[in-house]
Image (cartoon, rainbow, N blue to C red):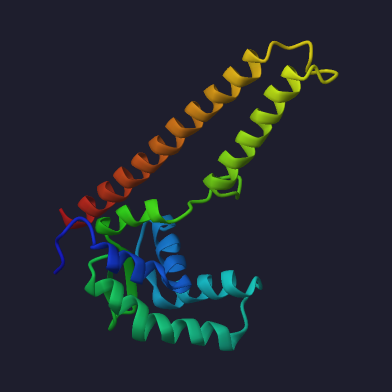
Length: 180
């Protein structure tokens, strides 16, 4: 099978150009064990429709598209292990590098990009308000909010990187446990 640790950029963009493939990867990253095609298709259909359960026609459409197109393609690229006979799929460790191309969601339900933008806007507002002596902010040295928000950025970045590495190590450890 495919043994390289990273895909060429053209393949990365091709894989991630489809919303169902992106959602399939996200679901599989969140799942420590192999998923049945039925379960994966139901989860993706629920996400697409915003209804639980999703309409039957949508669930069938997602199921067929995953089975016939998306999962075989990702299996050929070494991103997932898909058994079309048993209808089981699991993510492979090689897929981990694709997460940097996707805007990952925090536990609070917002993307890291949204979180950092909000942190930056609030930090900038607080610092400028302090510099402009806005009531309530004028009593605070502008260096204090600037430093506090820079520390928040640093701690958040360390947390995000640490969580990503721990998640990757956990997936790798589970994979090793299955193999040995």
